[in-house]
Image 1: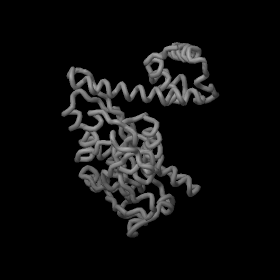
Image 2: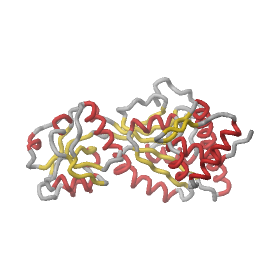
Image 3: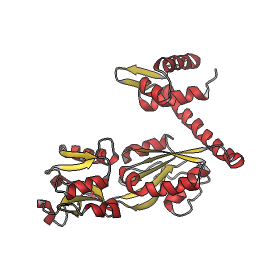
Image 4: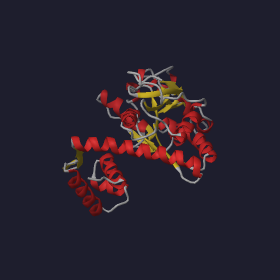
Length: 316
């Protein structure tokens, strides 16, 4: 019985996509070729790896075991490439970074731009997800680093504080809420909103809190970035929940020059007061490229985790 790297890569794509069709596309293979390769892999191993269902596939216990080892092999290959690159100067290193909306829109662009300019042999695969989905992905070895809000359970991860990231309400200056000193999210849901697009981490985060109140936010308009959201709020079109650092950035401040302008009000909900933290799996042995990016984000040397036993609470 032999399993090739190509088999493991294809199986990982299918497992993470939850569908043979989507996994085949992610692996740049035709559906027929992927299905045939998967059948040969199962025949070679003598076990069923997936349960085929109407809306996709589900991993069997054997499939979960194979996925775990496939991710370990993938991480070891990344470490191999990274270490050999130091000798050859030609091989490229790739870092998988998962982040929430706030970090991807305001914290990362300048930092990643400088980092990539200084490390021409490093590529960064950046994906935006809600914080509560980033944590299990890191535990499972799907990514090298993650940036999340500390309001989620960080058990099983090493984590390092980055900065405060309180959520606030932006509302037009002539809006009925503008006279308040602070506001809770339930009151915000009484009014039409402007927000970042579906699929963004913040959109999912707010939808989850609204659902727990048995409410559905009414969005008048969904846009791709916070600067655009704040410009629309400044024109008087609606209210928006945004991260405080983004709202106070120079680009966002110019948005207040709209027809009406806007005010920023603190949200009183406990989950709105949060910090961004940088995370990696507790048992991870980061490559040199991953360590370099982590230290750039932290603006300080990152402690060596390879010789430290994971803590039960995932603390750094």
